[in-house]
Image (cartoon, rainbow, N blue to C red):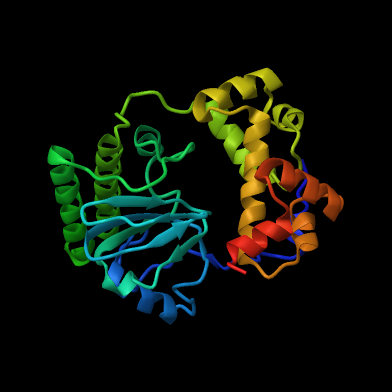
Length: 298
């Protein structure tokens, strides 16, 4: 499958790369929620604009108010709650961000080891919405975050390579604790390798093809195998999974980018605007223009 569609115009939604603060260990950042807006401005970003980070963010709220929109769902995590924002999701912080007391644990996708990613369900399909741990789960997360903070600040006490390994292991503890608090017990049912490979291929090529047969041929599976794996992991067919991914990207572009609908259609691999409009209406229940007006409050 060759790449087309998105490459002609470049990103229309502001993308955020993982930035390491001077003096912090490679691979992970701990940022206070109250200072997040000022940090964004230092890097030339509007903290309240739609942004697409290329890294994970674990948001832990201790007190205060916090509002954040993630892919058209508004979350208001309260004190004691955790929210996991995934790479590629479009986020928009509310104006109450400076009022929140808490921390963001930010790390790129390749930093945790593969075993942790599998056991903590850090891969697709993704859990959505805040998690409120209770009892031992809450205490375990509090202590894991506290230990991570201690080692994060103690950069000079260990050789750099050892320090990075300590941080990676403590992040693993945090992720596994969070999976348990969600009710996703390590060792329980997880998406198999077939679905994970399919998900990665869809992320790469959803603007190239919407045909299950193309993905099956590229990955070396039958259409039936992909459909079974996708239904087991996500509850939907492989075809619907592809189409839902295209619709999500279309909504992101229509709501957050200045591109006209015709340009959005071209980025997503549609031959013309009318095909895009029919597809979008069939899956979203409205036209691209009507969705854009509603999403922008106009």
